[in-house]
Structures are given as structure tokens and as C-alpha cells.
Image (cartoon, rainbow, N blue to C red):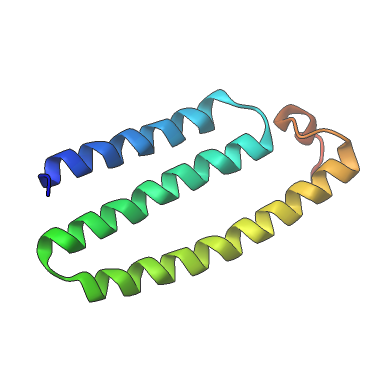
Length: 101
């Protein structure tokens, strides 16, 4: 296999790609994609750390729990995106600024 530094550098690259996606886009769907990329980098870092520490079963339980929570949050976020699109007709963050309370 490779070294932990190689895997963690890939994790860091994925995380910063997701962070760039969060900062560079104004579309809600692109923001959610950026959040998903960041979440997958966190999962990959858990798996990498668990593999190199020899705690694969504990890592698998953490990752499965994280994925279940993440899927439920994404489902709620997509429901909110659909609701926002129906009320404003756009997915632009700037148009949602007036959509308060």
C-alpha cells in the first residue's frame, strides 16, 4: 500500500476542492455538492486513519453512522432547495437573501 502521507494529502486535496466549491459558487446545488465533497474527504480520512491504526471495525462503525446522518441531512437540504426554488424560481443565494422568517 501507500504511505499515510499520500492518502492524507489526497484527503486534503478533496477537502480544499469542496471548500473552493463552497466559496466560488452562488448556486445552492453547487454548494451542496461542495459540502458532499468535503464530507467524503472526512470519511476517507477516517478510513485511512483506521486502516493505519489497525482499528478497521471501529472505523467502519463510525463511517456508517456518519453516512447515515449525512444522507438524512442531504435529504432535508434538498427538500429545502426544492421549496426555495418553488417560491423564488431561482437557486441563486442572492435572491434567497430576502426570503427570511
